[in-house]
Image 1 (cartoon, rainbow, N blue to C red):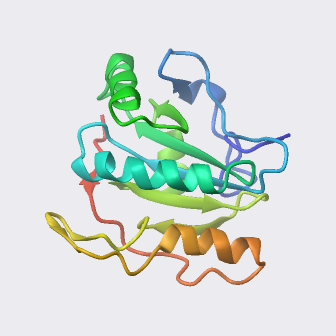
Image 2: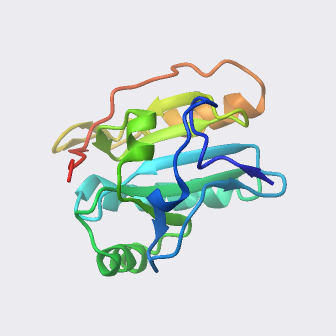
Length: 180
């Protein structure tokens, strides 16, 4: 088992264990288990309509790559209570680990600014992809009727094939991360 949550992006930048807690208030961690090779981290906000809509896509990714990738939803800051996190988990049938990053340490390490914003990390904690989940959200309040680009899924597929991820970065669309 490889511990990722406390060494994210760069080996020298540690994220303290107490910064991540689950919806029950227990210390959380980002871990690869068994045959998992990659970690997906998506910053989420329970109030953000895009985050709410993307839970189905993220659940599908978690199911499709079960045992191959670890998927984590991260709620940054102290704006949301544990009860709000539990409600979000329940209301949207979230099937992946949901953690709070109360002190923004993980958020800062990855330079996350938007919810939802996705990151694909390799086994050595390098950021292989960051940005949009797909191109459904063209801009705030504007959604496409047909998704034509599946950035996160394509990045995962390319990584498993040991191919370069292209694009490595897209500009996320969504709600700004509250800094409190």
